[in-house]
Length: 90
Image 1 (tube, rainbow, N blue to C red):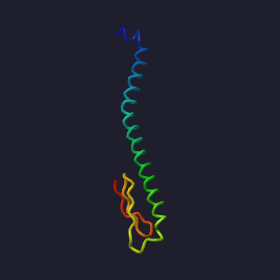
Image 2: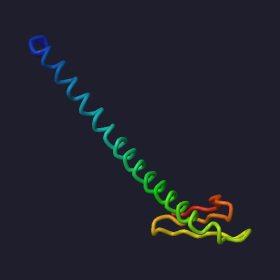
Image 3: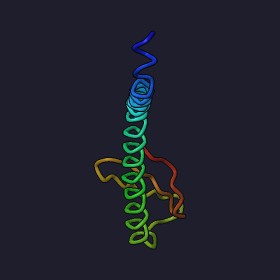
Image 4: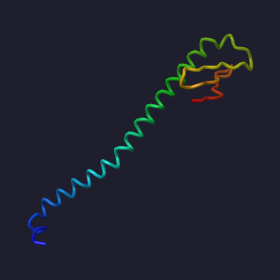
């Protein structure tokens, strides 16, 4: 008990450091997961933009009820003759 009274300030600092370490240890996987999800979303949005851009180049040659298919190696897009994305697959 005397040890605790003598080193109370240092023990409090140690406790705070340990708690912060635990909090950061738990929070780190969440941050990494969010970063990975953001990267996946960015790739998907880029692919979608590329598909729409490619559709713009061929839209005048599409007949009614024809579909345009776009595959960039990551995502597969199906766009109808009006420019609506019907299907997307990874």
